[in-house]
Amino acid sequence: MAPIIALYPGQGSQKQGMAIDLYQASAKVRNLFELASDIARRNLYALLSEGSEEELTAHAQTAITLASRSAQVRLAELGIQSHVHSGFSLGELSAYASANIFNDETLFTIVQRRTALMDEMSARARETLGELGMAAVIGLDYQTVHQLLLELNLPRLYAANDNAPNQVVVSGLSESIARAKAAFLEKGAKRFIPLKVSGPFHTPFMEEASQPFRTFLDELEMTDPKDLVISSVDGSPITNVRQAREHLSQQLARPVRWTAVMQRINTMAGFDIAEVGSGTVLSGLCKNNGIQSSCLSLGEETTIQAYAKERAV
Image (cartoon, one colour):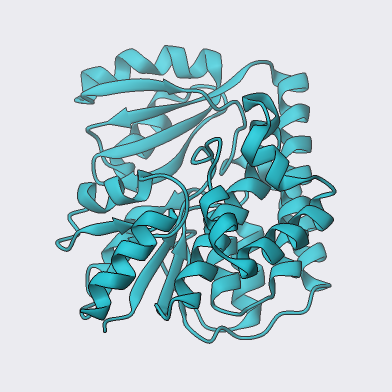
């Protein structure tokens, strides 16, 4: 049986009820829920099963990480091995945990600190500069978007996510985003879509959080990865603890270079590719990046069981 390349989704993939079926199916997942709840000081089963959309959004980073790790735990429990890991932004933390760079207690401790720092930087930016936003530019590549932003010279607007050769996300002042729309469409963008995310993630707005986060990471126990981990900061492999700490701290303020991750994965043979966690965003990005093999969605008990049975035949 071929091992899988596991891709872990980032913020925005949360949905009510995610991972509850995994909780019901597995004692190991239930133990994971208990651990994460203790660290977050929040009943995460109650949050995911009956919490409001507002509550889930407030705890999105913890909930998404829990859903991804629950799916990975369930896959391993059924004998499905993952030897390559990568995560989109927040998902990179799940990739590191799945490669045994740190344990789940450390994982959820990191998520709490990361959330607090990002919320603090977002609040400070809104208070100082005003309304912030993000928008997806469909039909242009990252270099074209980056160059156009330099030419426009609009205040505080950055290319934040390099999702695919035809999909880039910009982030910054809402006023600058609105002013940029016409220029992107004139440049050849097919669509310009405002996103329901207010945090200026993966931009210089987050720069002040990088060093405190690195100091925090330096105090935590980590080991070199047992599997290949590909960083979404630049598409490079993470081979040791020093690189792990550097990339996790850098990713707060640097763009997500998912296209680089996909390019590296596209050179690998003999693997199944799977989105491990909630949603199908990364599965879609596999197609947009020209990945020839289909990207499975393995975030629910039914799909995980079906995949396990198929491999057993």
